[in-house]
Image 1 (cartoon, rainbow, N blue to C red):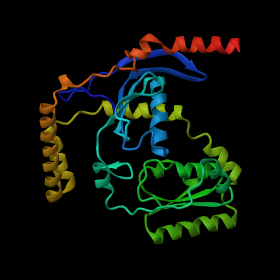
Image 2 (cartoon, rainbow, N blue to C red):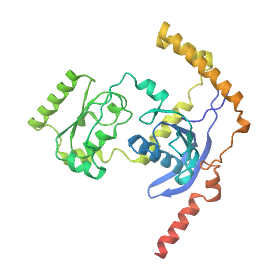
Image 3 (cartoon, helix red, strand yellow):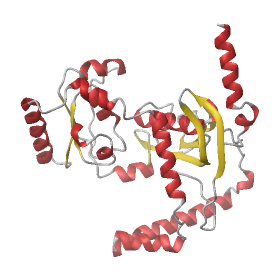
Length: 315
């Protein structure tokens, strides 16, 4: 999320144009955002979501934005930690309910089926297994991005997947057969992919790989993420009463009022927490990244780059 000021007005981002270049990747950007990534899943836990958040945050920092990450504590890892390039991570003392999910995430996942896969592969073996097939079937009931279908397509497989979450935006229509999350629809999608395979109308694995390898780099993802933040910053911030009205109107007369009541209770609970623990008694962590970040000020990227070039020349 990008930072917004109070009072219903958008805080204007500061102008920033860094002279740092890394290869062909320039960190020059017209706007500087304060970005907060919130997720139950982050390091030291390992997975696709964790890697996505970390890599995207690093690229956004390189482009001059200030980025922090908020997650729950992992055993002894609590409080505030700093990762590469001053990436600040808040490990909050939240109770984990199941599979690294806090109560909020678990509540939204209750209606979903869970499947446990046995015999997990080492990451180095995934490619060797995928290239043995022709069709990759993904039956997710919920997905944010689904790295698995990108990996499968990169290995030359035709993808058949449920049409949920962000999956329809990951691959072009020529490389994926989208299905409703039902047995009947998935069977029809598989039959379509098998027919295309037998009739020779599918692209060759080499062509699929060459197409997919140009789609995603973390630097491109960071630039596209910037555009989303800039669009959001142009929208008006709704007042509390308008947000409650929207909940009631969008969620129905009964469910909407229940959600509105929960929202009010959450707001009151936040006020109580701030009264119990005022902001003035909370330790303030330094801002490591961003245009006014402590790390940026004491050791700017240009100096780091110069030092790295000197080291490389002496080797």
